[in-house]
Length: 460
Image 1: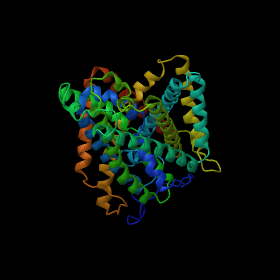
Image 2 (image 1 turned 180 degrees about the vertical axis):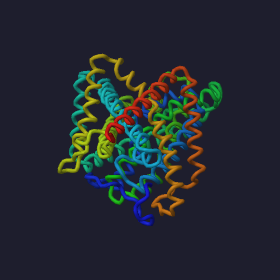
Image 3 (image 1 turned 120 degrees about the vertical axis):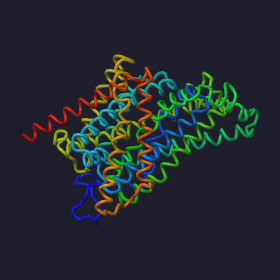
Image 4 (image 1 turned 90 degrees about the vertical axis):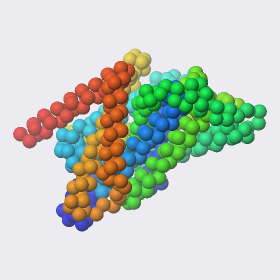
């Protein structure tokens, strides 16, 4: 929401060589698909076991936070669609060091996660077809999705669109099967009714502490929703498309997450060991042949979809940093397809390196890297909300007309910041997450120091 020369004119993105080829339908499905990944298909069982049926409260709190954050980010992105998204808005609101720090933090998080998703998808596929080599399959995934990203944003958007369709279709089918099971409509399968919601210790068997522990697990499942703001810079009619995507994606995420988690906790006791694969556990109760294989393949698709989206997001953030001289300028060059090729390659090379090291030294490299960047999405969301408070106030004082306004300003923004403060306190209080929080803090300070020194050097 930087102020244009003419305050009454709509804000525009800085000049860029990227092609606006993404269609509104692709942006909507990207926003939906980026939040529906392995965190839901495989990781939701951890949250359920941490809080019992009360995990629904954790999902509602996390979902509320994400919806507010998406609307705040959407307001800024509609006013100024740019591939740097929240990094640019942080620079506008808080200064260039803040903007560069957020951009580099987000990039570091994505390139580490790219490697984890590649290795994870290959490992899952090998459980279905053991003859597959995990190292070769993992590297093949990296090559394939690098090529897709180099082919142009139009192709990337179409791949993500169909990936998201598959995931959404799987969740809808799952919810319908669960409802049929609970209503006693499946032949030969007895309905548990709602007994699992109140049995085994009650609805809140581990109290508020369990809800807090589950919140730490749940919140990271929503990571990736920021990709919508990054992609807005390459979308046709970004102001309208982004507003529509924000409005539809937010409630759909809640429906899909709350709906599927509601089915799981109603069908499977929260104490069950089968929650290591919660979707497969429900389908097994429903006595559906091939359930384990089907859900494994869907999880592979979810991981590959996230890999594709994260490579796109990392390359665009690198392009933006280079365009602002916060990274080497040559990384901002684009080819005839208007793809920042060098930014794509720079992002994927780190992923290739981390993947090779993880395959050579299993369970030693990626856990350390993921622990360092694990909390960075929370910091990105925090700075995004602070930026929106500042830039919205600045725009209102100047009388700037915004193409999309977040309702409930400033109260909802403040509410989201309070929720984030509670989450940070939980991270610091829990022994198993304290190191992650401190590592993220140290990394942030290091990047901010390097950014400040580099800028001072450039300015003489």
